Length: 115
Image (cartoon, rainbow, N blue to C red):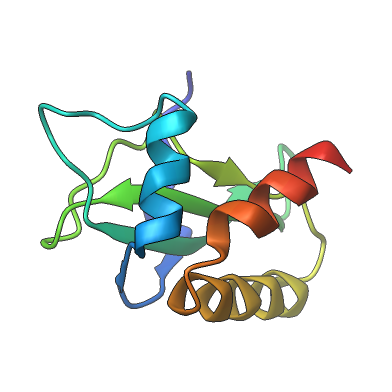
């Protein structure tokens, strides 16, 4: 797996994982009991295209993290499809932040994975 480009990694503020999201996270098997996750880290990530000019596509990723923001980049909870516009990625990240604050992030993410 390719190491992420943290130069173009724009993280939103950490969001405490709500009760319903925590239950769902445990059901998905992505919860690590040895390093319990207490927060969501939502980030817009740039992926540089292989061409002579510097050009990026964007995705939004959600990682379970601890209160300090430590997370495993190899195990995202969710990654969006690639987007051409950083504005579209930012808009999606903001809507996911709202869902996380409402304790509905796992329901939204699962629905997007099924679609």
